[in-house]
Length: 75
Length: 263
Image (cartoon, rainbow over all chains, first blue to last red; front, side, top):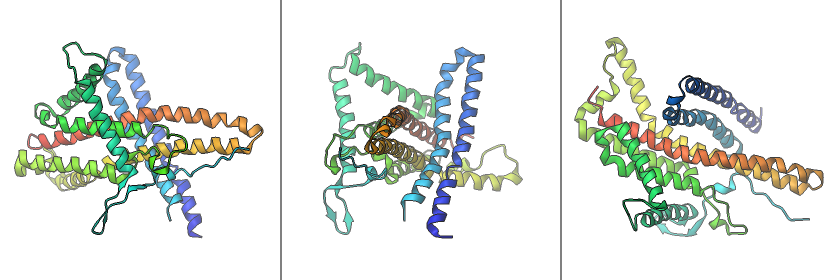
């Protein structure tokens, strides 16, 4: 197989982390929402923690994106 | 027919020298990256100079904004590090503001027809910038950890309450996780800014290509345009959130260094 073709396939495979990030984000928001609905008075003080977890989880998906970009655009 | 050209998504990250300078074999040119660092730092200094110029007990609008940011980080430092944290407040506050302004200024639109050196540039979208910030943080953690705890700083790698037969494994894991901190800290900020700006420019490129195709395709250009607006809003959230995340993680690492001998 040519190196260029392998690179493009690798870049496509690097989209897979998005699946993990999506599952993780869904878990975070579902957990936060179910907690917030059970105890609405405690939801405001847990919001920064939820956003922190959101940013940390989103990062795994972005890492895949960066790998794809590096594979496509670098020699 | 309009002459529409579209740059690739990676051109925005190109570093262009404005004032070429060479020191020995080092290239220390004043680049567009340096220019935007200076603009960001200048904007922060200007803002706080304006906000505190006529400081009063009942704050005005500008002073109110400055106080909200000050208290936000002061609370964060106090809650995370504890009473030892006061001396780290200036560092964490500077770090937070600098990253926040660098991220937000990167979202400014470029003035149409500006020269390439003056295009809007996101300084935090370069790994070397974020890595320098992360290394500084970890260096402070290590130096302060040894100053405060002496050799007991190594207890950071040996948590108490772990069975003896598990200790070698845990210690290795803890050391690897400590060493990977500067990498994860810097790559997180870099990847968010890099990916966000690429997505923005990709969507913008779709608009231009569809518009250039003419006819019914020009109307379809509205969809990537709406997409660009949505991604821009997300990017504002991400810009603020990443500055916050960097500050929080810095505080957590400093707290580890401050309390290494306690557990």
